[in-house]
Image 1: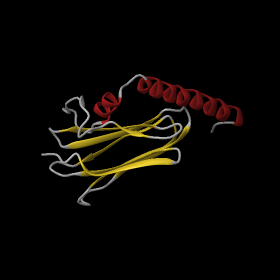
Image 2: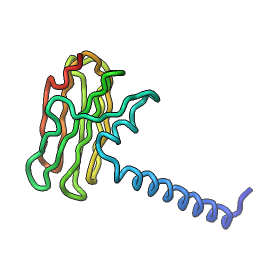
Image 3: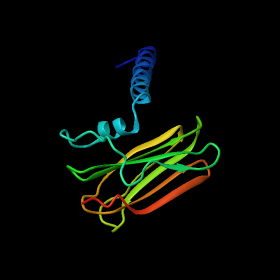
Image 4: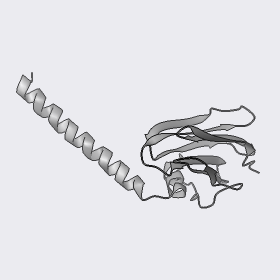
Length: 148
């Protein structure tokens, strides 16, 4: 069995390793565009790059700090991807996606920081509803990105 000193050393090493993983993950994502983040998060290995905003996106969330909502569509597998980016550093942000017809599981993420997402949902040949917030301001877009 481990003694008290040995457990302390194991706990310290675990903390250092976990800290390194968190720093590595956030550092890699910091420089990625919203489209690159969607491509990296796609569940299929053969996913095409998300390179173009769909249906008039990005949209602006007004206010202070305000922000931008990015929605992308990938037509090979029919996935939609959304990310919200705050104009400020540390504020409440959230992003939600669901099929307008109510089928399937919705996707949602909230955090305190500069961005939330990517959130992906499959919605081939279906419209989606998007809701995003930065601070106390939000926008909702219904029946958008109606894939063909």
